[in-house]
Image (tube, rainbow, N blue to C red; front, side, top):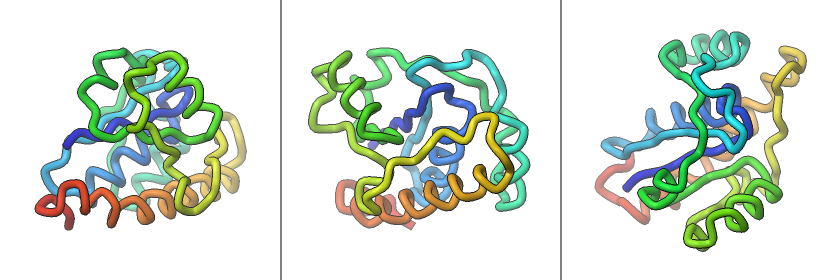
Length: 148
């Protein structure tokens, strides 16, 4: 199974969500990209600092633009908002049925914390954590031998 996590710039939400998923899903390839990526930029310094506090190292991350091939290879695509979901399906109709909101099961879009306060970043990371936790049992059903 291959999971693609998307946000806009690929320097805040999606790299953090991808790292959380990868930490919790054994042997599952998880990657991230941006719909309007800041290509080759490192993860936002505040995102890196907050992730480090949780034992997650994002120092090697570099922003990557979403390519059609990424979606062809993905079993599941997780986006941050309904508008991103519509955008991806509109631009890449072949991905229909595999594109979902990370916050689907918590009934929440996950706002972009870029250039926002530390408190806002923390709140967004908490929503990402809740979204990931809500997806883990569902992803385990797709690939049961890989769940932690």
